[in-house]
Length: 166
Image (cartoon, rainbow, N blue to C red; front, top):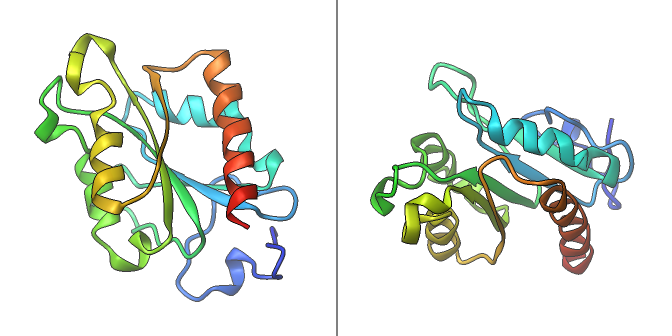
């Protein structure tokens, strides 16, 4: 069971979903991510080992039939960019559905996005859209599956970001 500095645990908040990877120490924040069936984002998130840094990790369900994700702690969202270069289609529908829930949207603190530089101006456009609509900082962008440098930058950057939020 992971616990925040204030003693709140994910288990103690009614209606809150449980993390896919629970923080192994005092919770400093959370990452919510979406990954398609390709699992690129899921592999990237797993390689970051954020739970070792006190960050709970939650996954937005791929299928509408799966249980909805309910977040009740401050989080940064990580999303791939969809649409094949069409900015209007950049944010996955599952992410839109998640953020359209006012209880989930209330806890967002930042965004990280992945994309493909082959899509030019639409590269990581999902991050631009979410940051603008949710009025949160766009913290980082990386290409496709990311590099070891991206993994370190996200891990270290999230620790710094959540420390500044305290």
